[in-house]
Image 1: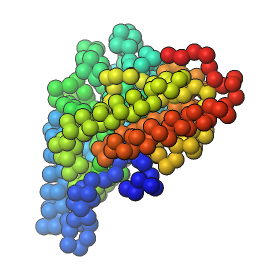
Image 2: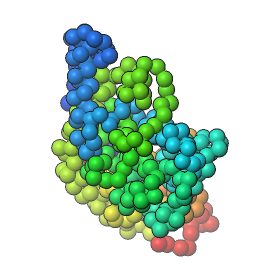
Image 3: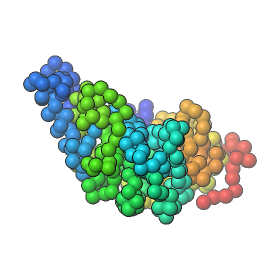
Image 4: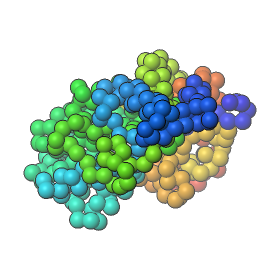
Length: 395
Ligand SMILES: *Cc1c(COP(=O)(O)O)cnc(C)c1O
């Protein structure tokens, strides 16, 4: 990447594909490659099927699953929909009560809202101010007719990491299924679905240096953990998700998973050091607030609000540094982040939030440029900010 053009610090939105992954994908496309339909019963089809099944092993190894419990999807959005709607339909005889949090990704919150409109009852548990679920409150919210809880692993805006071990144990005790949106966690932190009490887990390749448009849903192999399919047409993926498998995408996610597993510790240490560098470079500015945990969260995300600045102007002033604003996924709606407001941030502070997303290819130089830009932008914008917008408090 030409540093004069962009400084990419938006790894929580998406990541570039590893060169080896792109090369492997190209090998599954053309006349000389594995372009056959994995469902075809001829030598080329069987070769493609081998590629698909090898990738399934690679991905399963990354999360401690058996290959047969992995269902290919188009990404985490589809996996979230499939898990929540599919399990809710399968288990509707147990009851119609569901539990989640307002800080989940829209792929989860909108799915629950759609189910609520169809007669399901959804309990939304607000997080504590650091973004974490209150475990006592969670256990109290579970009822006889609760069939599913959906709690994300790493929050995509704040980096808050939930205690999935503890949450899952509570769910098991009460015979409630646990779905985990792990899109930001897979490939970054070690996950073992056989050791951890997780029933359904969503992931997507483009958050761990694989291609966009491919993901998976892990479905625990137990009679009480089944999902009704959302799509019909051919019985692929053990009847859960039909459609011709995209061999090039699948070999891409498989190799990206293998590389992520090899590099996990190295990446984590590299990213942690850069986050510390970034935070120590800006923390002396007055009126900053970290959104999410200051320590102990996923180090690839640093989300900071600044008193007395307008978010849109800040984004403009930060160019060419590519970061996400307090509107993140809602960038086009003009609304401030619903996630930050759920943490108790007022509209103004939520608007001024910047999410720095640090990744595998981030360098000290990237961070230093970001620090310089951010400090200059905050100081300059505050000179022009109406005094009313500057708050007295600081925390
Ligand atoms: C990126 C992301 C998604 C959506 O994944 P897609 O592959 O883009 O559908 C869902 N949940 C979380 C937490 C994410 O970070």
